[in-house]
Length: 181
Image (cartoon, rainbow, N blue to C red; front, side, top):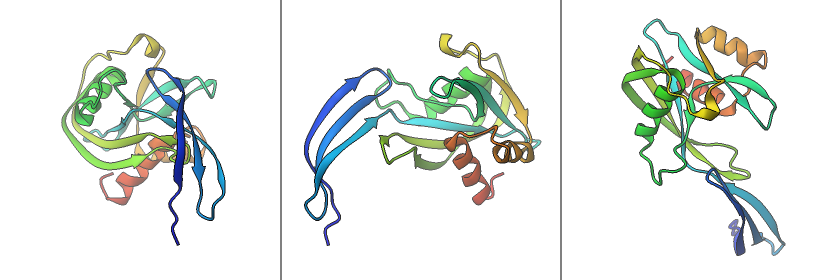
């Protein structure tokens, strides 16, 4: 059986520098036709800053759709740089958000965020051999803070609902599975 969904028509509904909203007319296997709304966002990175003592650095970020600040690993994209090198983005986001510089930056996984409605790929990087500098936050990030936590504390924060960011949880879980933390 053919399980391919056919696109009959695709239209761009809205665009800004961070995303493009699409609405597509589709034909599903079996002949049913319907619409599908989805979002295209630029590739982003999640950086796990791991110190020699086994602690990690998290950032506390206000997430407007949720109306509150939450802890997560440093992450982001360079929306204005088409096809930005993920490694360069990882170094830049780490420096901007935490002030940390990594002598070693290892790509550990490629993943997708919420692929039921968004094309938003991301790469997980493990940052080690860290030195501290001054954060270089953008104007929209000036309220951001960062702090170090043990892995046990991070796991407890996930369990307690203090960390709900799926990318942070996925990156931590991945690194645990491959024995890197």
